[in-house]
Length: 77
Image (cartoon, rainbow, N blue to C red):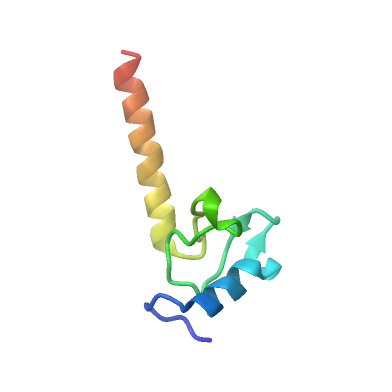
């Protein structure tokens, strides 16, 4: 399946999430075919994970870290 900007169907999504080849070191989800920034985790009720193959996910993670650092800075000031 080629990379598209469309959300994958449930069958494709489940197949990708269960495929151990889409995980680096067994914990980091890395699937260049998946356009989602935050796909669900393998155990869906535990939340979402980051698709590190999507460049926007790296930007999103940097923004989240900056926000956390700024909040911490202003609270402890």
